[in-house]
Length: 338
Image (cartoon, rainbow, N blue to C red):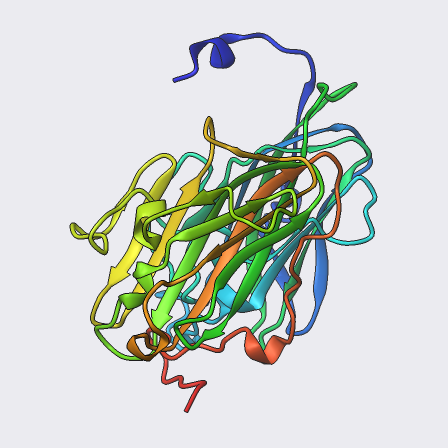
């Protein structure tokens, strides 16, 4: 526990945005298919200190037994956050992926900065802003209305501390043939890399050779990597293909490991070991095995980083039709790739 931080009296005012309406008793906001709704917005100076939300749709509802169960709502509900009047979102990601698991699957896990805790989704990443922020949700599902419970806590300040960065989150996804680089981020600007969450699903069952790929990190547009690891699971502080299975710790963990389904979700956050860059950052996992030994897989990733000013996330959502490009989705009869 950071005793100095938790007991220090600081200036500022505590504020909140919520979907709860005390006058009516309504706790949620409804987002019809294809619609975007702004959930929280202000023009002040401050720091978002906690973001929590939840929604049904991905599990069986005992209060509405005829309601469909479709876990793809976790990929098709998009969160965007704009800071300091920037035209483009600095945060753009599906809610499942943003909160750490990208298989259209909810897994209970907790960490210091984000997690999925017994039905809820939370983030404690500090999100500073000087000239306001706006958070919106978009429902890309073709038929289901998103019903969202939402609370956001923030501290209103007269002035931000010096040298405080703006939070960014970039989502990337796709299918790889096995030997291709798995790119996590390609960032321009000055700041530091704060971590990532990566989910991989092999096309063949009981196949985890994608974990052989070490990280290659290129700083400030250098052509040679500054940091090279020894394996993908090693970067996430595991070993031997996460030999002892799922676990969660404050800054790294494996919320999901299912060898039979060839599925792994991993996260690592850089706190005291944050990776600094002056003009750019690029990261990819590159497998050293020969391509003929490797198998295709689908993946998704969220990169978390801070820059000296708000700018567009380094990747965009892309085509909606590609978002659910997975081999298998639990609890649904779904096959996107022949």
